[in-house]
Image (cartoon, rainbow, N blue to C red):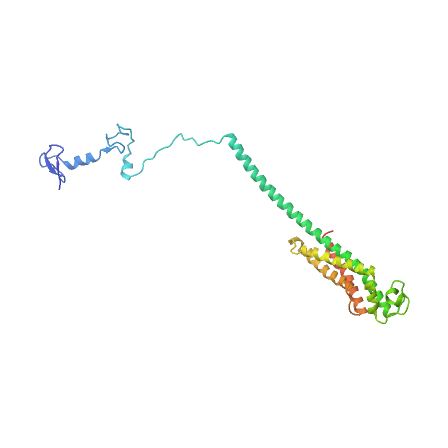
Length: 274
């Protein structure tokens, strides 16, 4: 316990005393009144009751509600001007936005044009491949007909001004006993060799084009499938001219079937690029 002086009579009393034993004053009530006096948080000066600000430094006095509830003071901020963009800055920003949108638009248009060009190029390549096969098939038809004619005239010893040089010895003598000798003469002929070489070149060209057409765009998948069917028949035909096999009957029958099928498949492919 500590001793303090009574605020009324100056005598020493206990700091726990509620009434001064010397002068009889009610110390508890006075203490409550004293504690109710507000002290400025800024400079420590006692502020009279009812004052709205410190008489010394002007610090605002919080309301009783704010003191009791420990609510922080609200400070109203007024007259704050947000920075305004100058017309030049606005213009630059607008130009940047327009430029960005224009770039996006140009990119989208470019992609669309590119897709369209690729699609047009693809169908153009299908047309090119089909027409190359048609050209090769036409040459093959001519040469296969000559092969059949030489083959037939040798077996049946039929004289013909076009085939005698292949089927008869010295061109006008006795017919060869083996048709293979006649066919060998045909394939040794310079003009026929040139024709067969042209067919082989056509095969190589078509093969390259077909390879470039793999993985078709979705809208041309059916066209590519039709072209593949045509390509299979084309290879059967051209290979018969390059390397005839079997008997005359099987060779003739196989060639006639392939020749007929080729035009059927060609007309199906043609529908996609007409």
